[in-house]
Length: 207
View 1 (spheres, rainbow, N blue to C red):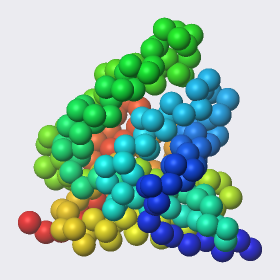
View 2: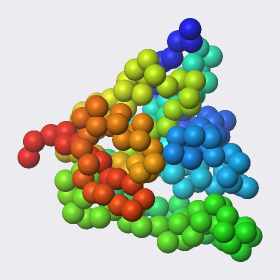
View 3: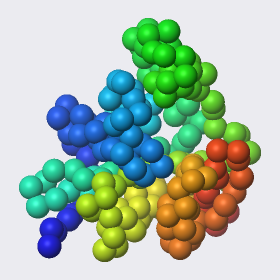
View 4: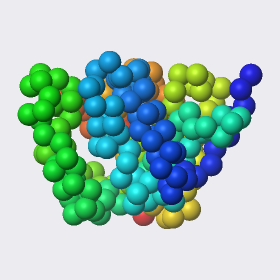
């Protein structure tokens, strides 16, 4: 049986960041492999992974196998509103220059991601007041189960708590029933229902 461990991400290692992008793609279809859905294999990672170890490596952790190869990650930021401002200032502009929806078929997943990139929504301020931090977590199928997901998630939650953060939120697609069930099991609650899924959150400190 493979033994897994958790450590902080090595944000200075380009190969490790590439691996996080790969995991993002391999879990990008509501937890399933999205490789066949995208022409550009890095695009989904540019939106949902890359900025986190760039700006907040202290809140990024990886689940690694016996060879120290990441098989999962959780990445987060302590202040979602401030993070949005960072993205607007320095992360999105070069990506908007790099990518164009016109280079992909209009009905493709790639074009949809480019549109999301060009029109990135900011965190709702009322949500941020109660749950200022946010996170993403993705684990490859071979490493799921055995408590790995919970251990990885709570490694980041503990880091949030140690930093005095009052709460965090995350988004989950409505078709990803396993993830919704997992989050509810470990103590998150549904904060907002959307057409695409749910925003879930957890309070970490008392006012």
